[in-house]
Amino acid sequence: MKRYAESMFSAGSMRIDWCFIAETGNRMVGRAAFWTLPTLDKPLDLVLLDLDWENEDHLAAGTKFLEQMTAKMRELGAEETGYVLDSPSCWPQWQHFPEKRIILLKQIGFKIQRETYRFEWNDKAALSAISHDLIFRTFTEAGEARFVEAIKRVTEGTLDRRSQRDRELLGEEMEAQSMFEDLTKMEYDPAWWQLAYAHDGQLIGLVMPAKSPTFATIGYIGVVPEYRGKGFIRLLLHHGTETLINAGETAIRADTDVNNIPMANAFRKIGYVQFCNRREYSLKLNR
Image (cartoon, rainbow, N blue to C red; front, side):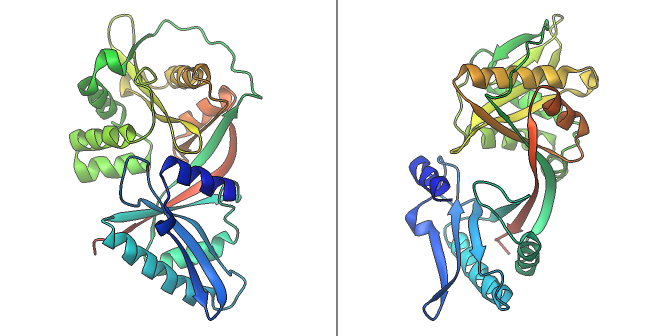
């Protein structure tokens, strides 16, 4: 946890004044922090949440603590916050007592948004070569408009519940633009982001690798509806993974909605290992 916090401070994703402890008398009963992307100046998520979970008053203490923290986030300009819960508990947050955490989150008003499988590739696994005849164009070559249009195309009929919800709420144009803008807030090289085309010029899909403060990630990936079920998602995933490896990355993490079985299978086929399941929760703050 110390190493995680140090990396967050170094990247600009956490700040000293975003770290809090809760005390009763002289006894510490809780701790938590705010997290954001390095390019933003307001908090996005709650992280490093811990309470004296085995104490009988942990729920009352935790409720009061999180109510104060979410109020502070609202003061700092956040309109929504998130919290992720990994099972089994794992680095970097080691979220033990998951059921008690869920009860606390619901008590505050958090609602589950989706569940994902989390995967990791590391340099202990060989990345086998895959032959293909796709034509790739980088972000520099293709430009923003084509990437936004590609995001709109690949989210049509998506199995990802968050994208489904956002398309319904925002409309396909605005959802694609919002997704693109979120991705630009991560660290990336424009040469990493690529559109894939068939030789007749038809768009197949896209892959947009990036980096978070703690690890490299596939970022975003998808295939347009008319080319699904033909193995292209595995080719795109392989290409995105190879891009990050060639950039010197030795560990890559990514996740996919538990409903997206084709994507999960693609991860497994090229050597990614599932290391946990994740529940993503959110809370509206502008109530």
